[in-house]
Structures are given as structure tokens and as C-alpha cells.
Length: 142
Image 1 (cartoon, rainbow, N blue to C red):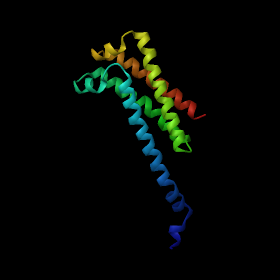
Image 2 (image 1 turned 45 degrees about the vertical axis):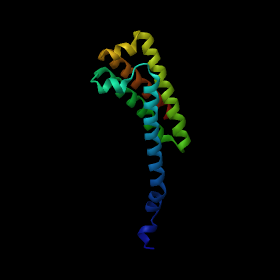
Image 3 (image 1 turned 120 degrees about the vertical axis):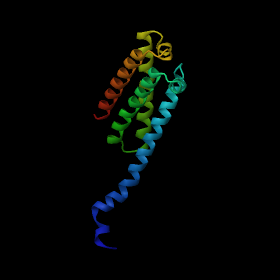
Image 4 (image 1 turned 90 degrees about the vertical axis):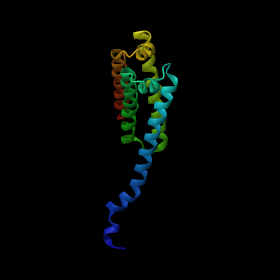
């Protein structure tokens, strides 16, 4: 075998690249599954509302994706295993659902407001989701 193919850099890449792809795939699956679970557990049907042109639903669901992705991305910098990514993904989803409930209590009738296209309510929800995601991400960094 040529010496270039035996270099420590190439050996590290050959070992690490498949693991990196696995972590990316698991994180993307967690993002998709988390967003789907969130969509199923919220009282309004955001995807249907988005298809109908509801901007508030689009803003809200965009916040869900960001709120889930930020801590998942942070977990990728610290995770040593797929199990860790799964655990943090589940924890992130739970926090995002809690944030939704808290904002719903504060604003009273959040699902109805989003259904009616109230972008201001959706924007506050997105801000809360991103704030929660950043706190989780910071906690992950130790």
C-alpha cells in the first residue's frame, strides 16, 4: 500500500467519516421525528395551515425546527455515541413542548391565534423556542 494511504490523517478520516455520517443521519432523523411528534401533539395542524398559506403557522413551525436543531447541533459537538444524540433529542422535544404550553398559558388561546394567522403570537412563540434551545445548547457545552 502506498505510504500516502497509510498516513494518520487518512486513517483518522477513514475511521471518523462513517461515524460522522451516522451522527448526522441520526440527528436529521431526530429532527424530523421531533418535528412530526410536535406537529401531532399541538392542537392545530400546522402543516395543513401552512399549505393553506397561513404565515403564522409557517413562522411557528420554523421556530420548532430551529428549536430542535440548535440543541441537536450542540449535542453533535459533545456526543460520543448515537445514544447520547437520541437522549438529547428527546429532552429537546420535551422542552419545546413545555415552551409551547407556557406560551399558550401566557397568551391564552395560542393554537387559535395561530390558526387565525396572528403572526405576533407565532413570533413570540418562536422567540421562546429559540431561547429554550439556546439554553439547552449552552447546558450541553458544559
